[in-house]
Structures are given as C-alpha cells and as structure tokens.
Length: 565
Image 1 (cartoon, rainbow, N blue to C red):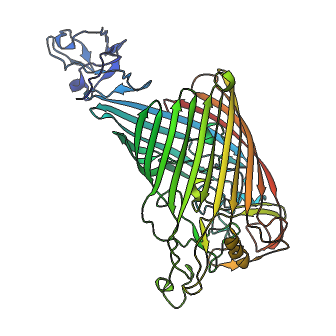
Image 2 (image 1 turned 180 degrees about the vertical axis):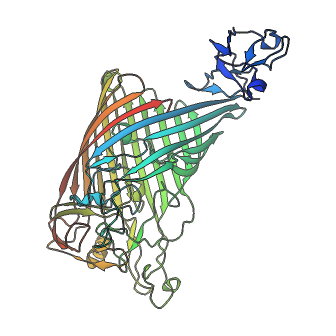
Image 3 (image 1 turned 45 degrees about the vertical axis):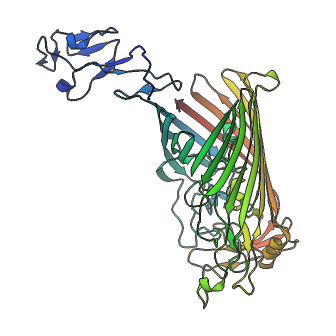
C-alpha cells in the first residue's frame, strides 16, 4: 500500500477563492491580503466555516458563503531538502536550477585547442590551427543555465522515481573564421565560413530516466563509470569518457546485497545517438585515417546494446568498484565506402564479426589521513576495440607555427577491396588513467590538484596498414580523399597525452561557486621527428611541417549559482 504523507506544519495554503479569481490562489500563511482586507490564517483554522466578508476586485463574498476546502502544500522530508508534496497526490517533487558564466582561454569546452579532438566523433576543432584567422583564444562555454525535475512516489515495490533536466547550451566556438566546414581543410579559398564565435543556442537534455524496483531506464549515467574528473576540475576532460556530462541511453538492474555492496547489469547504447560510446571501424586500404579529419567509418549496422557489469562497495569512507563492458565493432564490407567500384559493396565480402571490450577500476577515499573535507579519488580504464570507454573518440592535431603534433583513434583497422585480399579487423588498445586530490582550507575555500594520462597503441599488423598508406589524408569540401606523406621517421603511429592542473573554488555564500582552473597539456605525437607534407589547412599554408611533441596551457574562470541542482 502507498505510504501516506507525514503530517507536517503547513507552509502554504490555498485560500479557496479560485472561483472568484479564476485560478487557485496559493499564498504564504504568514500574510494573505485580498483587496483592502488582510487575512491571517493560523494552523488548523477551518476556512470552510469562515463567515467574514471581504472585497475582491470590487466583488463581494456573501457572509456565510462556504469556501473550497483547504489544500496544503507540505514539505516532503522523505528524500532530503527541497522536496514538497504535489497537492492532492502522494508524489514528492524537487525543482532545481543553476545559472553559470564560464569563460575559457586556449581551450574549447572539452579541452585544449586540438583540431579534431573535440567532444563527439568527427567533430573538428579548427582552433587547433593556432593562428590569427582560424583561432579565437578567448571563448564562452556552453550550458549556461539548466533546470531539473526530480519526482518520487513511495510504492509497495519501493520508490518510483522519474528525473529529467533541460539545459540551455550557448555554443561558443574557438574557430573564428575557419569554422568546422569539412575535415581538416576547413574552408576553401573564396568560400570562407562566417565568423562563429557564438554559433548556436540550443536546448540540451542530459538526463531523462525512470527508476523503479531496482530498474533504471532512459538517459542516465553509464554504470561503467564511477569516477568523474569534472568533480575536481573545470577544464574539459579528454582523458576519460565519463558519461556524466551528457548521459547515455540504457536499461539497467541493480542488486543491493546490504552493507553497501551492490551489483548492476546494464544494456547501453553502443553508437546510435549522442553520448554513445561510438563505433569506429576503418578500412585503411581504401580510405585511410586522416591526420585529423572526419574519418569515414565502415561499420556493420548496430545490432544491440553494449552489455555492462558493475560491482562496487560504498561506505562512509568512500567507495571502491570495478566494471567491464563488451562492444560490437564489426565492420561493414570490403571496398571503398566513398566511391564504390564496379561490384556492389555487398558483393565484396566482409571481415568476420569482432567484439571489443573494456575494464575499469575506481576508488574514492573521504577524509584521507584524518583531514576533514579532503578527498582523493581515481579511475583507470583499459580497452581493446572499445576506445569510447576510455577516451572521447575524435582524432587530435595541434599546430604551432610550422610544427605539428597529431594522433588518431579507431576501434579497429582492416584493409582490402574484396574477400580475396581483405584482412581481419585489428583491434586498437586505448587506455586512460585519472586521479585528483582535493583539500578544503575552510568552509569557503577548496583547492584540487588533478592529472590524467591516455595512450593509443596499434598492434604490429595495424601499424603496417597505417604505414603502407601513411595514414595522412584530408577531405576538402567537394573534393575526393587525397593522400599526403610523412617522411624522415620510422613507423610509429602510437601516441599519448598527459595533463596536470589545479582548480580553486571560493564559496562566499552557500550554493555560489567562484572558481579558477589552470591546466597544462603535453602531447607525445605519432610519427615524432618526421615531416608531414600537407595542403592548405585554413590559414595554414601548403608546406612541410615538422612533427614534434607539443605543450599547451589553458585556463578557465567560472561563476555559478546552484539551487537544489
């Protein structure tokens, strides 16, 4: 049977004049004023027996007329602060909101200026060209306001909960003129993009789920993820692919064993909609990976969700846990997916189906060494053929003068135009590790120190595929895929990246954050020491570029008001 709401002091009251006013009149109990008369309602007063006369907009209420029954809006203490009972129901609701201003220097929302390494597959960050025409070092971050609705009802099966949010995204861009048009080439001479420092205002949804009797269904945080670096940093994270910022579509069931021990089994989106893990199989023989362009993937159609399993222990001191996931990375057909030749692609044959996997472990320790309010946490991910569990899926390239650092990511590589010369898929190994320590100086000030590492490794067969084609392609608008060259180096397409940052937040009053974050990035480039011969890239001229490791420094300032969010 449903649990009845507890009897609590009424904080708001319906005065019973909805017929006269045309709508319900809900007012604080402390003062209720109608026209020239002030009505004071004490707790327990029966409004239906009131016989006083008052004037409402020149219309009288006849003495002895019966008002509508009192209907209270009560505080709901079952689920914490901010919940109240919806009148006439046993459902509790909490409405939260936040408003934020965030400005960034030398980065764009999800990390440092790096062409191709933006949030989401194939997104091109033209700011990574680092020149006066293509790049705007000063940017305005998106998601400047949001509202959330949390609705809960007690049932005989436990709590029924539904939750969703709506965020206003201001799409600032670090690409001043080059825009994001078409691969690494950006724009072509005579057809420049218009300046797009502010290129969109959109409504974004990151959560929309139902929880009931152990089940969670909808857009949620992945059960693979346990530690979110964004808790301790304002700078965008490219060293993990936690689904906290965007959510993921899935269906999960959680078993509670007692003592804080739980296990979950989840089926999650493998690559259908925004926020999914991404599926990236590339035919390196017919359409090679680009230095940082929109790669063309040759994937088999999505067959099913990714299965994810999680086991964790939550205690007052923190938590420890682990997760595993399986990811279908089967390819489509041999042959070129851009310009099919004489035979239909279906007749070319295809590689055998392949599955990738990912595993992770994470921890959080509260009050380490007895330091109240401090925390230390971290997570490491190892994946093979499932890079979207370890890092965002986009490639990376950053220019500094005539120097270039780059790297590319794919779940799997294969080559061939038909079954006779086609190869099997070679799965890519991608790993990441993140950790942070936060110290609370006093109730108003706290500082965190955080760091991260990622690595991308191709096996010997995949390296041979990459080096045979030299893996450096660009796709200009309206043009076919072209290939440039790398020389002066051995075949070393593996690459890695690291970060070290610190964030300080001041809370002058509760729920108001004023913070500053500065972070250093280092790229160990693929093909280090080589020479890349590239065509014109935005304002970057057609030339030979030295491939070398690079460092970048970025900063973020944020002021944010949170209200029950």
